[in-house]
Length: 52
Image (cartoon, rainbow, N blue to C red; front, side, top):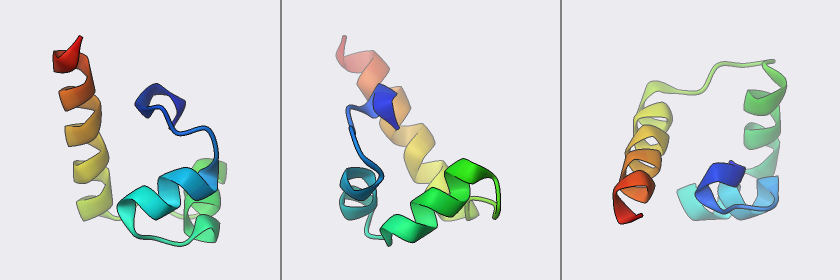
């Protein structure tokens, strides 16, 4: 989350179109990250690395 520049769970949630509570559950390990969301996050991290 922070490696992408999002300071809060709410910031990340808004950026990817999910609820803040969903992000919280993922980060706490209470539920798994859905595959499409995981793929999106991997793509964002990869794009961020290429930008530098």
